[in-house]
Image (cartoon, rainbow, N blue to C red; front, side, top):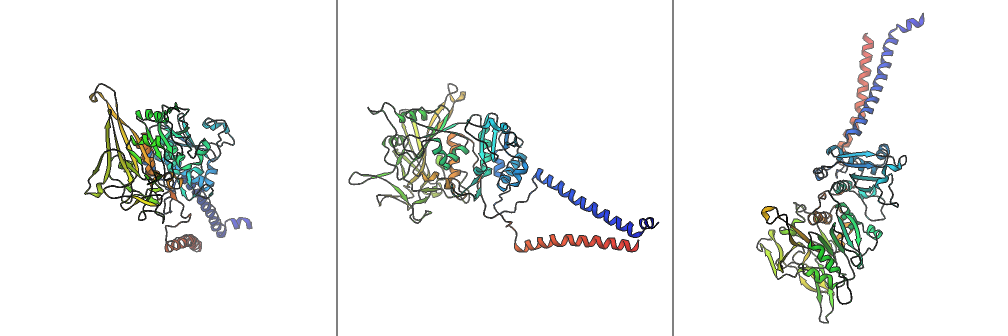
Length: 536
């Protein structure tokens, strides 16, 4: 009887309602939290409060791949839960999901290679290559690129374990553009003249040069011009820091590497040559480059001893010795087109460490707009035997810079006669599609880019978020190699992992709001039920 009275009592009725309401409220909060978490993961509902916008997909990344018209798969080799738990993997994974959200041709998927190792076996280049749980595969049709999580970040040096900047946007977009090209071109790097690499493993150690070509969409191979011909599908030949000369037919050698290069440039191909102030005189190679208007400046003293020059500019250098020279942009001409995307209101510095100066060999040299320094650029021109070639400056030393040879000044850069740091030469070729231009004939070009600094291609400069060396070379790859590469995507430094865009006052305000609001709501509900119970 007492039990029945208790069940009908006010204490049970209102106490029971309170318990039920509390349980329902707690269940609703948990359900809401679960639903919101699922939706946040699906639709990437995150707020990026870092000053570098590390977690925000940039407009430049979205724009760089907007022209693709082929399906691209980005495959992560681990389960989503594992990817989201590890900080650096999550960052790359969310970037890929952002690209998928903004482009209907991009598809992101995951595969657990521990449970299903054969799912990615087709992406191995040979029996020795390996794919790990930290690998990222970008594929389209039969083309693919395999990256590692580490390659998505930039480190101070090869021994560092903690990255200082995020470069995943550029890597993923480069991979997407590379695999969606109709044909992936080959970049050949000469390897039989004392270059710093003679094997694929040596090339892999030269991360700056390798990453540059790889990001530009090239398949890379070393080539020995003594024993091999340049492949027909090679679009870019790179000569980097040779110490021995190239062969010509001279009564001893029956092989001419120079002839192979010349034949290669008879088609619409390109070559880049990087020497420096320590490069010995390479007579055959340098005489051939002079036919393209390019002279690497050397000085002969009274004893007929030849010295390489080094550009020194104490007013525009990153080091006190004046040898880490900041280049002066040109504003017009073919050379300026290689860095048109960089010449913004605040163009990044482009650095030429320990550079050998360049000059023109052509007699017909023109200086445009001498009275207007904003349109200041040089070019040379030569026509002989039915062939016309032009040379343009890409970067010059600032007025006041000097050329040093054996400890003495041997030249000075002026507004009217600058020392050139990088040049580009071109030769037009008529592509015949009919008997006249009216029937569809077009003109294409061969290009030769020359630079007197090998450290220009150092990994430190190419991967820097401060300097423009990397973007300049990607621009050159695009223009000279006719390839589309993502230019303008910058690194995102990890200056801090804390929420740093809010002031102390704002942080205190958020803390008070998060602490006080639940307490006020709880107090309000308690007062409401007490009043209802009192007057019920």
